[in-house]
Amino acid sequence: MAPMSQEDIDWFKSTFHPIPKPELPDDCVEYSLYHIPSDPTPAIDEVAETRSRLVEVQRSAAELTKDLLKDYIWQRESFRLEIAKEDGLTFLRGRTNFGDSIEDEWVVVYLLRELTKKHKDIWAKVTDSDGQFLLVEAAGALPSWLEPEIADNRVWIRQGELVIIKPRNQKGKVAEKLSLADARRIITEEPARLMRSAMVQEEAFYRLRNYPKQISENLHSALVRIPRKIAYLLHQKPAYISAAVEAFYLRDPIALRPLRAKEPDNLTFKPEDFVTVSVRFTRVGYAQLKSQDFPVPKSWVSALPPKDEGKAYGQAEVGMKLSCGFEMLLNDPQNRDKAVVREINLVLEDIETGDEDLPSNAEIATWDEKEDDEKWLDISFEDLDRELKGKGKGPDDGSVPKGTFGDANAQANLQRIVARFEEFLNDESAGFDGADFDEYGSDTDNEELSSDGEDKDASFDEEEFSRMMKEMMGMPSASGARGSSRPSIPRNRVHELESESEDDTEQIQQLSKEMEAELRGTGVLDLNRPAKAATDKIQSKEDEENDELPELEDEDIDINLAKNLLESLQGQAGAAGPAGNLLSMMNLPIPKDDRSK
Image (cartoon, rainbow, N blue to C red; front, side, top):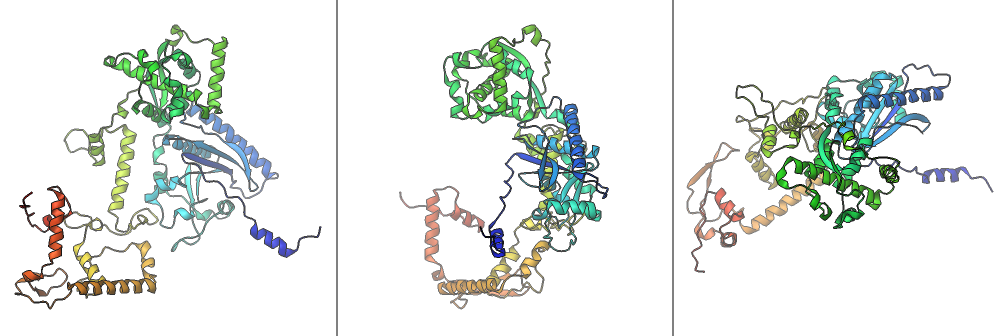
């Protein structure tokens, strides 16, 4: 076989494209930890040194999760690290599917911060399906050059701090994208390009302000009435609760099939031999279980106490939903290969064969009977509206009242979101892509409000609208002498307006000519029509001169317009509609329909 020529080799290279990395699924957070020593002197065996340090980090992660997350329940997947090798680099990598529990994602971020604090030469980066979500949290304090398109491999966590790699030139739009190799080289060779901002870090890690205390507050304990077999499973491994709740919450007709039988003989967890025990849920999971309307299966109707028993019925109803969740988890074909299902089936087999005994009532009496307050679930519209307005229930002594919406963390997060939204609405430099901020996170333009406190950017400017219409019609505008009241153009849009093409201008002029020709054909623009008298003198808002406007004769009224308006009023049948709204805006009474029916 003849060797390939250089031309053939070049052609082959041009046709070869590496398989792109798959996108991160929704509700997943991905994290990587790299060993980047601050000492530029290479080790004798750099690969072995890196691997040894990464194994130490794995041990530290196991200790952290054991100490901080002893009783923690993950919504779907837990925090885990495995050694990986990619592009010649050895590093630690992990991925956690947090489902609907956003707090799980922030638990991961907290663990990464703690690991980088303990290991000085470890640099971590973390992303989710939204990309650099830490930058999303700190959007109000970011430098103007940091756009999402160039953010990859720029955001790192080192020694518990947020570190951002700056571009070489921060003037104008930054287009410099960094690869992982570029980022590692800059970290070791150009430390001056590493930016640490206390304001950015405070915003990015705002949700971690109450950690590690808040970790336990992400859970909720409640007393529920469930079959003894399920109580034993949850006592053996409380993490089973998340899979069961999710099976209940995401149920479909196929999953519900085992529950449709009238007799409970074929059920894995029969509605009998009930015990009341304390079950630990994630807050999200408990809310999903508690809030869903679920018709009681026929096999469970006789197992529930009367509704008028209040608390007992509530405990039994939650227990019924949880039991149905376990039933669907084990019998749904799509769950057959899940690890949690295999584990539960093994435990149930041991119970059936007698290798394991179910706990007695005396043994269950020694278990923890913790029951948390459910006030965090009670959210009324009035409380939400009060929090959005910055108000709360409290004494009228001028002090800032403490809100009653949710818990303290929910109040703080909601008030922060509202404050950010108000800043955006009041920001004159905000364009279609959002607000522009300088390097220190503050808007460089002063806020401009009208005398009555109205936001000019959010209001309708009649003068500006009239001026724009005149320019479009090719008519002269007199606003130039006074100066336009048009809001200031956002800084990041100036270059786009200056670079408007001549083709667009020609199209606008052509469109204006066509509109003018069409209007002249109707006689609207003919100001020399017969007039009865020049009676009214109206002072223009855009010109200080007084113009005499002719009053039209009765025969000049557009009969078709009046006819269509009356027909529209008749079609409204006394209800609200466009014709009635137009007459109301002109302060004209709506004529009565006196025609005989």
